[in-house]
Amino acid sequence: MPKIAFLGAGSMVFATKLVGDVLSFEELSDSTISLMDVDERRLDRTATVTEAMVANEDLDATIEATTDRRAALEGADYVLNTINVGGTEPFENEIRIPQRHGVAQAIGDTAGPGGVFRALRTIPTLLDIAADIEAICPDALFLNYTNPMAILCEAMFEATDVATVGLCHSVPHTADAVADYAGVPRAELDYWVAGINHLAWFLRATHRGESVYPALREAMADSATYERDTVRFEMLRHFGYFPTESSHHFSEYVPYFRTDPETIEELAGTDYAGRMATGAYLDGWTERATERDDPDLGVDLDSVSVERSEEYASRLIHSIETDTTRRFNLDVSNRTNTITNLPSAACVEGPVLADATGVRPCSVGDLPTEVVPFCRRHVAVHRLTVEGALENDREKVHRAVKHDPLTAASLTLAEIYEMTEELIAANAEYLPELN
Image 1 (cartoon, helix red, strand yellow):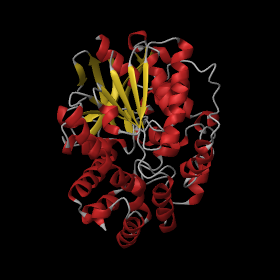
Image 2 (cartoon, rainbow, N blue to C red):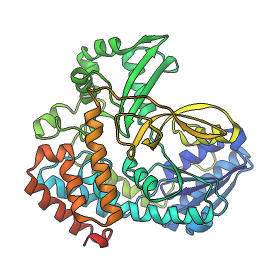
Image 3 (spheres, helix red, strand yellow):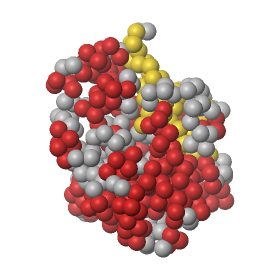
Image 4 (cartoon, helix red, strand yellow):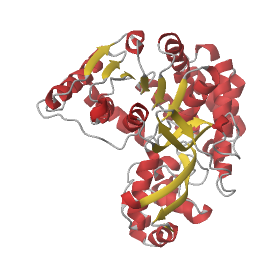
């Protein structure tokens, strides 16, 4: 029976989903689940729901809850990371300050100034966690869910000896969308995807051996279907490949869609209506803060049950524990030569086989010439951010933001410098070495 430590377990909805995923496998139903968070009240909420889940399903799992990270890590075989360092205030700084300067981020947790500064405030805590893992459970596999995924994983690869993979649901969610648009059963869609997190590409997508790309292009020609995924269909139209992140989020990764309000409004579409707006995710986060602080759990404890979601974590753990071979799209170090025309130090997202031997990245060779430049530019931002964080190098932080495609399309170099200085000052509590 494995022990699985959940760091950041105060995020009740996501944490209970992941616990339910694990317990949905009979072979994992006797696991020890150690829930850890610095917020005791929110941690208690998650523990209450997960304990009810175990009781209702009559499982042999053991649920622990602690604010002591080292206690949670004791004897852990797997460490799931979902932490959010700082909460709402720095998140608001990372969206509103760029917005005032003219950088219109919708989400701002992975790319852009928001992604850079979220990484800078998270990396120190992540390295503290890594030091504890190295001391307490050095053989544990670290499964990271926290954004910005690629930057944080790259910092772990660079500065620690902890075995680390990043997990994101954008590939399976995009597979759902591709199957829907192409009119084929999701279970019969086969695909080969690679790139970097939130900026990977369906290099192949087939149904019964035939490419579904002609069907995707036909679907794009239908105005109602086009309106469901405007940005991704535009990328398909102009560059030939379908990307893996939703239209509103993907719009932040390239310089084409967010430099004027009219274009943002025009591309809002139907399925992502409201999400294209600048600061849309922050607005939703702020609204949900009331729900997170509500003493009413909003859950019927008598009926809460184990269900399996699309998230990878439980399947990955099950593959390793039971020697069941599965293929996932995970975030891994490119030192494995997963993508041959991206730097070896990069964190890349690609196909990975998992079984009792662990995780084994596959090689996809070169990314197509049409799409690799998008990844290369963000890889440079990631590298500069990691180096800026590890070396406390203020100049590299500035250069990271200057290389961001959306920022560069929106501001002059002098304006970017001024904005970055303001962000450093506003986040001084989390970046003491840069101030």
